[in-house]
Amino acid sequence: MAAVPAAIGQRQLSGQRRARRPNVVVILTDDQGWGDLSLHGNSNLSTPRIDSIGRDGAQFERFYVCPVCAPTRAEFLTGRYHPRGGVRGVSTGQERLNVDEHTIAQTFRAAGYATGAFGKWHNGSQAPYHPNFRGFEEFYGFTSGHWAHYFDTEMDHNGQFVKGRGYITDDLTERAMAFISQKRSRPFFCYVPLNAPHSPMQVPDAYYNRFANLQPALRATDPAQEDVAMTRAALAMVENIDWNVGRLLDRLKELRLDQDTIVVFFCDNGPNSWRWNGGMKGRKGSVDEGGVRSPLLVRWPRRIAAGRRIAKIAGAIDLLPTLAALAGVPVGSRKPLDGVSLEPLLTARPAANWPDRMLFSHWNRRISVRTQRHRLDAEGRLFDLVNDPGQSRDVAAEEPAEAARLRAAAAAWGREMLPLVGPDDRPFPVGHARLTYLPARDGLASGGIRRSNTAPNSSYFTNWTQTGDRIFWNVEVVTPGAYEAVLHYTAPAAGSVVELRCGSARVESAVPVAHDPPAVGAAQDRHDRGQESYAKDFRRWSLGVMTLAAGRNAMTLRALRVAGGAVAEVRYLVLSRLDG
Image (cartoon, rainbow, N blue to C red; front, side):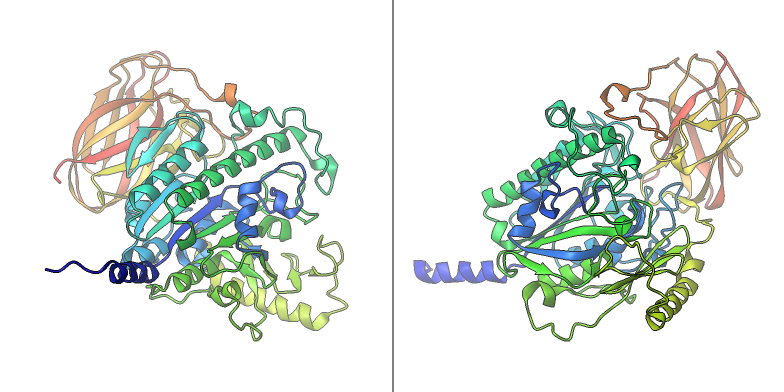
């Protein structure tokens, strides 16, 4: 066969490159807030690499997420308001995204993309809620709402626990960079939900030392509310994020993928402390402007003009349809989306008739509504955010028609959505995958047993001293058969005997080895962690094999004998299916 002439071969290669769909990298930070960027005028820190995404691409001036973590993630993943997907809280299973929801990862994977997620998932732990079952072929990170320790910590790699390397944000970024390198020959969708600057406030010395003596030039709206020590730690963590964002951008450039990759940066809620946030009212947990306004920076050199500023309001629900439209892939969801594609705004196609819209914010049955000009707060007060960005003056009496319109809209949205976020009685599934992890976070306890701290995420059960005490999980066995049961435990002494029972199945075992390590993490904290647990080195203890019948039941641990004054502390119960 004759060789293809060089010029023709080059044209074919160029055509293939033009035909290839763009890669997508989505960076989501945790508890950062709109104000923690130098791009937005914060002179307390410097974030040149994050800022460059907006400078070299588009910057949304009014972009909205949810007041807390898991709901925002659900809205990004589905393009739908979080109550529709069953996400009603941030722990004890309430953070789970219903398995009949179609995710952005499933959308891109169906179009031939390699898909990976590296960081904090926070929309369900057990299969089929786990990210490997939601469209991500590669996952490295953790699935709960927060993690207890950020150095050389335990990580979930495709459903199995492994030991991380170094500082967690650096480690997650390293894994994302490796994924990009490995998948560069085909389009990829890389989701990087970093868990900083969420507490515990831990960051390497090289970053913290820059802020150790900082007296912030810009302060919270009410400086008396600001804990400056917390501000210092948060800003140090954000500067570390900025360095890692730079590493991702540099990797794309090294691989000559930067022109063909859509890069997105946003945050999951308002800041996790009172600090400078542009004078907005509210912080994390609030449905006011400061609790739900986030940066949104989007870069794609081939399609999006550098320096583009977009004033139209938008939200996390818009990202799935927007990225699908930019990449030219079908959305795939059979359920109607609440979000709309922002592609006309990003690519400067005619958008003169872009309609005014309402965006709804919800948390703890509190609802607020945002239009292009106004916000109706959870108490029904109306604010003109063009003239009053700090929400200081109620204008409902001056604009009664607009107040009535938005109150009616909020009431209608609540009638539709609030019934979807009532009590959660969904069981934790067992047997969808070979390994099922049941963390203490998802369990309940009776008697004197308590959590290691009041925040369930990353906690463990402790103070198990009586035979009448119980630890139990509400489970549904979807694949009956033989399972090995393993506890991740600490214990002051060997010899305590426990029983694990589920329906008619039971195993009985004695604590094999005393294992009583100290809690770790306090030495690395830059600020008091408050309601969050420290970490421990938990040992694995096989309780034996039990045959589980299909169906819903309580998986219950109880002590038959107590040795050494306490039975054990329990971090996980792990069920390993033995028949396939």
